[in-house]
Length: 121
Image (cartoon, rainbow, N blue to C red):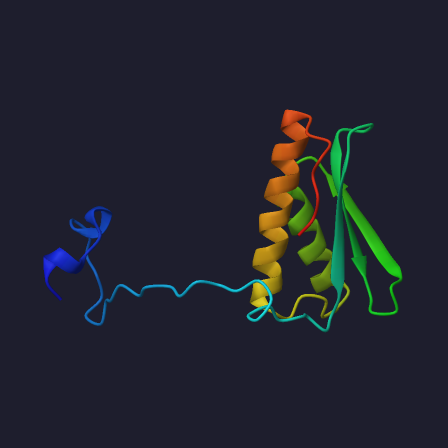
């Protein structure tokens, strides 16, 4: 691979023999979305207690657990630790895990800015 194909931040780094730059295709929110059959989540910003709350729900639309905290990493670490300790399979799709992180970050920003208009995509 020529140096022209390397991003600037990679130019002075050691790369693997089979190193390559892969262009990501645009993601279609509807066509490319995969439901996770383990659970779905509801994310809310609670301004009264200045925290983010995540409800983990089954597909009978029952809330199984609510995890709460102020920072995304506190919440998702708690969720994944609980899932691991109790041998559950809530999050099977990596796409679902990435989605949770994205939505928690949006909720954190809304909480910090006092933006009561946060909505979960």
